[in-house]
Length: 245
Image 1 (cartoon, rainbow, N blue to C red):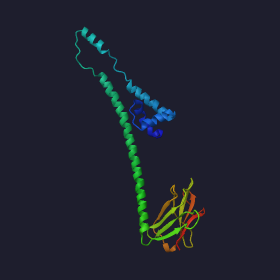
Image 2: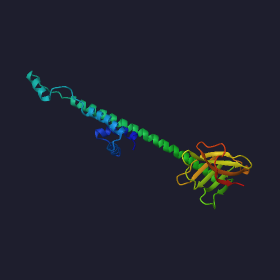
Image 3: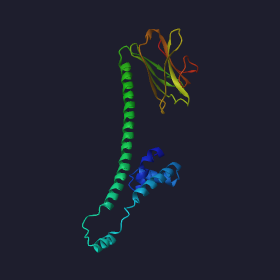
Image 4: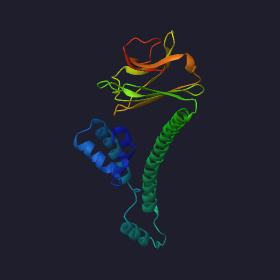
């Protein structure tokens, strides 16, 4: 865990009530003299010392109090609440610190789950679009890279109403600052941008260019590597090309 993830647990650690794995993570950070955690723990220990050392009211001891009251003929019968009120105040502050940290932790967890769910929904939508193109009765399929030494290999699926689907393998992840770009090349015309994409760590890639495409007027689908943000026209050598005609 990083320091930001541990900051809500400093006070709990200082009070001795931190739970695992945060307890061990904070101890590890302190053992390696992490400046952020050491500063945070200094503040947390100050708070813990204040809570643990809150002085009781400046009153005489119970024994001396009884002796003084007895000397003037007063018999003390009421119950002393001051120490318990002090303890209750300290416990309330501890609870506020603890549950405040828990509330932030749950809010962060909910945000992470929403982000994960959003990514999953995007991926499910993309897979659905790919299946529509794959199963379309009018879809034309073209292979590329077969029979060549270590080239990108794969297939291009072109559907006149749904778009173009590229599925590739042996396509190493692009270096920093670079991106793969797909092109739809019309017969006798200039390549048209069809979107940028990145391959996975295993060299596989799937990219969809959505929208209608004139299959009869399309000569090929190609892939180049360009600078991030893509290019209006290819500036680098073609890495893969699937000829439709």
